[in-house]
Length: 114
Image (cartoon, rainbow, N blue to C red):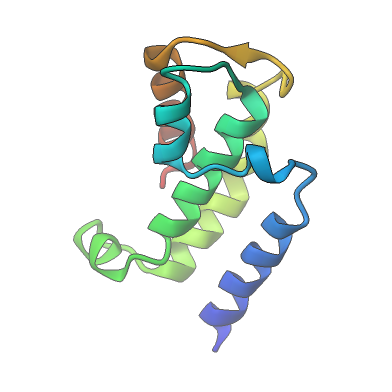
């Protein structure tokens, strides 16, 4: 029950995000979009964070890593703000290059440990 509550809280927080519906893209959608259009840093951060949250609910993946959803969410919550400010200091900055966007998404994942 405690795990479910953590997941629900994360979903609610993300649903209150100031991003427009156009900017609420998944990790893969952002990578597809950047091949033809500019992507804002805020879109990249949203996609990277949601990808991490999804990873924290994937029990098989977590078991392989020797973790569980509680530890994963705790770790993500501990590092998300620090990682966001380091990797995406200007949320209005736009990116045009697929490789740059992909590198930033991976850096966020590595920074948060998820």
